[in-house]
Image (cartoon, rainbow, N blue to C red; front, side, top):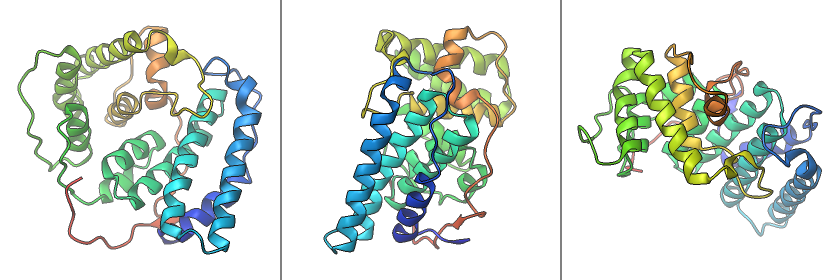
Length: 266
């Protein structure tokens, strides 16, 4: 185990990428199987180019880690879409979270860590104040860091925002029927917004899932929620959060977090 840094993150990702094998499994997003080989080759090419630039000293490890984090997220999305086992794509979601953390993108790191099942990592995130006015991000951060007090309204004119406000109360209280109702509301809102496009794979456009909605579904599952009455379509939309099992965590097994300085608002 080592302390997380840009350099050892980049080197570890390169090592893990060499282990990838594309599965022969039912795809979760239409068109993923057809495009998968080309996409994985593009990602490999981009990774190789980044390491060439590092070796030429044309790119710092910090800048390289930013670019590599994007490729890790693309890999996460591809593996999920093509039908990889949940432990496999979730491992890459955890790697995405570590890359986001290195960039100071703490809210995004929390979301991908939730999808990856990195619960101890979430507990060890600094209690960073957030600047975001998005109700969804405030709710997720409040659920992740229980001592965080969000400046949330009691209600809004937006039904999706009201569903998020419901989750802020129902998930920690384990009011599972209310949680399911709110998750259904959020899922149906985004499915309608995407007009069935969410079911399709989009090469080099990622992720092919709605990260905040699925992250809060994962947090709900961690708090004991099990869906009872979601439709097959609603479950499919939220599957990245609701599915089991989870992989062995990366945090503490492979990387520990560096000692943080005074938290900055993000």
